[in-house]
Image (tube, rainbow, N blue to C red; front, top):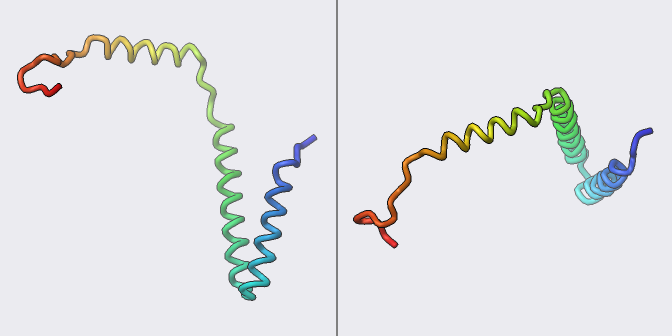
Length: 89
């Protein structure tokens, strides 16, 4: 069973905005532009959702290894001397 609680407020908002566009401006082109923008936005959201679900999950051991390797690389970098000549305090 799907959860339809999220699209309901969006549908109500779209209905109110569409009503305002048609009544106040009186132009069909504004309504078509609004519908095209909504369609493009929903297509972008659907594509990003599909792409995020297709990405492979990274195992936690790889994440820990990457963090540990980065810590080892940065542990032995030369440090700046705070008391060096010309260094402001």
